Length: 67
Image (cartoon, rainbow, N blue to C red; front, side, top):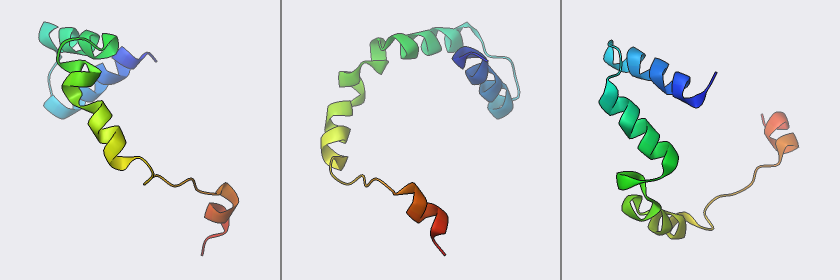
C-alpha cells in the first residue's frame, strides 16, 4: 500500500467522506516538502534543538525482560 493510499484511508475514517482535490494537493506538498511543509515553515530546526539529547535508546533485551 502506498503512502497516499494510507493517507486516503485515514482521511475517510476521520472525516467519513472522500478526500477532495485540496487534500491531494496538501498531501503532495507535504511529500515534496514545499509551501507550509517546508522545514523552515514547520520550525523543525527549533524542535530538533529543543529535544536533542532527550531521546534515549532502549536496549531491546532490557525492554523484553522488564517486569
